[in-house]
Length: 116
Image (tube, rainbow, N blue to C red; front, side, top):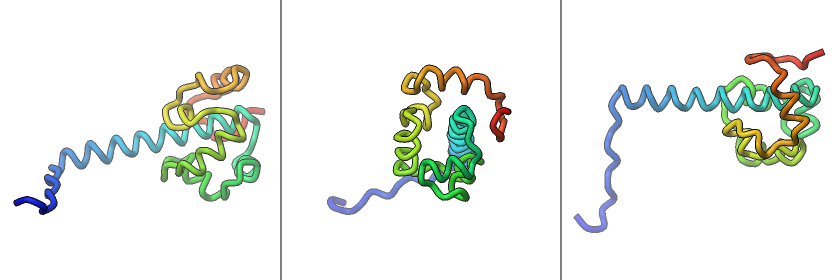
């Protein structure tokens, strides 16, 4: 029927589960990227949140993979750290300063506190 909106096909349970798993994996990866960046700069979550202008509880939720950061928050991180959105969302270090990349590589997987 012309002019009527097309109904989206329903996803199967398996398709929903795969999509949910992919979404969760992305949130976790982005959170690890932000954590690694913050730690390479030597900030605690509280210090970093103040430095970039993101509420500390929100930063914590991003780092723990609960939510993806909005473009606005990711751009605040980008502006302060000089690491591009490609790093924040995809882990692509080409858009980050070289010394910062070297420091990020020293941080163990899953670490949550700055190295001392």
